[in-house]
Structures are given as C-alpha cells and as structure tokens.
Image (cartoon, rainbow, N blue to C red; front, top):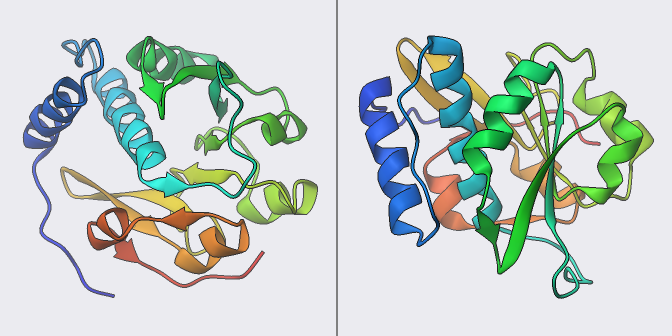
Length: 191
C-alpha cells in the first residue's frame, strides 16, 4: 500500500468547495457550525465527486430519472449530506439523497453511504443485493478491506479514502484511474 500525501481539513474544505464551484453546479460548502457538520459536508462532497468518476453497467439511467444516493444511518448526518448535495446533478441527472430504512431499498440507488451508526457490514449488504451495481461507501474503520468499494479513513487531522478495486469490479463498476490514483488501494474479501 502506498501512502499519498494528505491535506489538513481546512485545505480539504477549500479544495472541495473549489471542486464544487468548478463543477458548474450551484452552491458551495457553507461554514460549518460543528466538526460533525463539517465532516459530513466534506464526505458528501467526496461522494458527489466519486459518483462522477464511476461507470455503471448498462442499462444507463433513463432520461429525467434521478441519480439516487442512499444513506444508511442516523437522520441528523443524513440531513447534512442531503442539504450539502441539494441541487446537484450527476451525468445530467438530478441527484436525490434518500434515507434508507433498510438495505433492501438500496437496489434503487447508484451510491449507498453506510454511516458508522449503521450496523450493516459490506458482507451483509452484498448478501442481500448480490447483483445490484451499487457503489458502496462507508466510514467505519476497515470498511474497504471488509469488502466495501470505498472507505473513508482518518489520518490525523486529514481525511483520506481507500478503494477496493476487486469489490468494485465484482459489483460491475469501473472506477476511473483518477479516482484510484488519489486513493489508498486495499485488498479485501470478495463479495
């Protein structure tokens, strides 16, 4: 595993705000009133950018259909993510963030973000939705190594992410080289 240099959270916040502004979409990150809010604003921005660097298998989304991001976990964190991503688009599709009551609802999503407050593991998710081409992102320690596609990892005051290319490929997803080049690559159990 190759460690990549990482930025302090303040620099990441500025970088993410700049990425959102340059993407041509409305809005940037607003000032955070707490560390919790800032963490989820940053993670939401990462998820938004992850979605733009993944190719899903056919069939493509039908015209006018929403690009759904599902969140499994607590409603407060979901609200921050939904607010941060409001009005965004991915591939010409309006982005819709939904709070999932169960992993079974995740089949209608392109991305599922499993918060640390959720007890669901990547293995449990894949057991229920084996053939669903869903990008599985999580924030629990060891998430990507446990079979998730992308896992957030803290590195001191920095936020990094790990990518499990084998898990993504088994889900039928193609992650761009740009996305993988900025990540820590890990190996983990197959679905």
